[in-house]
Length: 384
Image 1: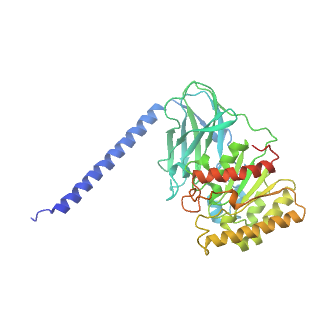
Image 2: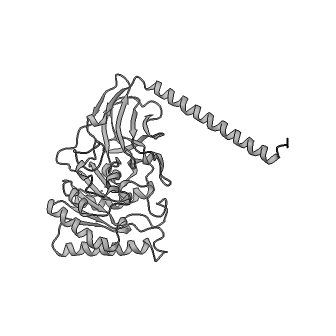
Image 3: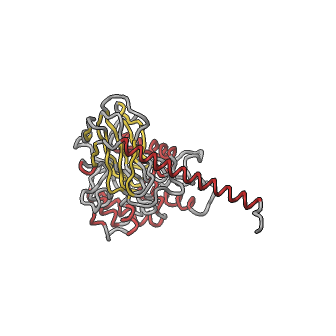
């Protein structure tokens, strides 16, 4: 029998060590899950669908956490319908004095993360706590499997006190069930609803609008603006598919928001901007004569100033086409129309995207900061 070579023995050893580490990691995960399950086995659980989440534009949906109504199936393109099952923008505000807060949620898609977006943003939950009139991030739930996930949302026990919390649902995954758990004896109630006079902000657009590629659901720019402006948000961003079709225009016109934010240019050529955006605007204006419309230019891609062909040129041409539409509306007496320029969005240092297109949390913070003054003007709110 031939002797095993040194290289072969070395490779075999490495494989054995790797297998051992994988086994130990699996054991630790199982043990950790078992300890967590035992720790919160006595919790009282509250199904969010029994209370009602914020961020739904329609109540008649095929699945409770869908973003489009059931009647949209077969009307909108198949890809748009598929993306409408993602729970982006949905959230739940609640009040509790619990010293621990748990969550159980059931994911519907097998893809927990993307190559450029972590599972915490794609499939996770995101918890904020109210401090006065502002919100502060507190904890998260990282998804580990398709189906049911079980997590404590905070590290350690919270200091005693009754507080209001805000829980965001996944950006790029769907959920069939979401529950919040608190220890026995802890109070739990849905937070006071917004006054009936406070209408939601409706955002329509692309992957950037949907939240790609935020690290957490609360860092998508519509969510940031919802917190800053103290308004509920309806996120109708459809990754790669915010194409301003007539079918979507008709659906959007059914909503009655405080403002429509139209951020679809990254998915449109200049020709499509010229052809589709006027129809979208007319449809919304016919249904909602006095609702402000905010037109958003395509972001300046990081490589745009250096690459004449491709998306850099396309975005410049699309922005020119949108600006022409905007000025034509102003010339024709349109009053409730507002405009966000590309230079109001991402920064000039090129450090706020993950791939030159999709913002990081820094990028989303900058987008929100650039849009906030325009939205405050549209909403007749005091500037900050």
